Amino acid sequence: MIAKAAPSMSFIRPEAAQELRRWREALIGAALCLGGFWVAMGTHGLTSTVGASVLVLGCIMLFLGVQRARFRVGEGGAGLVQVDEGQVTYFGPRDGGTIALELLERVELEPSGEHGARWLLTQAGQPPLVVPTDAAGGEALYDVFASLPGLHTERMLTELKRRPGARVTIWKSAQRALR
Image (tube, rainbow, N blue to C red; front, side, top):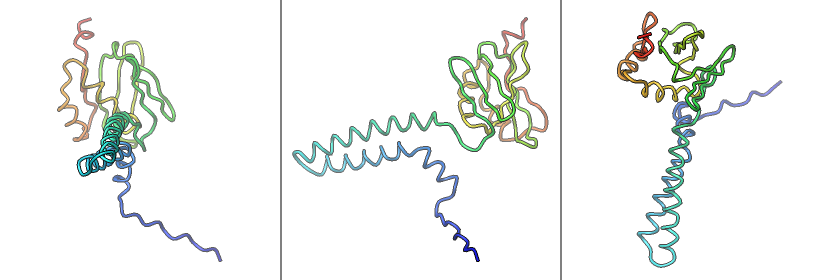
């Protein structure tokens, strides 16, 4: 007879645990800030100096933790998105590619299908770069899209939430359309 392992019991939802892991350095920094502030303000002499030092260390760790959390790669999506030096690169399980942002002509949102919604990034002379909206690192695309001249961020977010029934053009380059 083989004994079964007892199911693990967690009091934290998996989504909440994922967010806590994402922000762990910032949370530790915030705790150090609070503890250092409490010690610095509640004591005198050398202990107060140690508390102030812990407060400064906590502030530095909080700042660095927030920076790391903002740029941390997500979990669970198909493939990996990387934005580097004016290029978006997608490393997918079956396909991928790179597109230069200065040559980007169109951003489209393709509706949810069997594998979820996808971004289509089009550049002249190349097939569109297809990126799942839930790809790891995909949060970097929002900053890229927001920097595109004339893109309406609210419309983009509305279309994402609405899950359109057909392909939707989110942005088209006015400069390239004149050619």
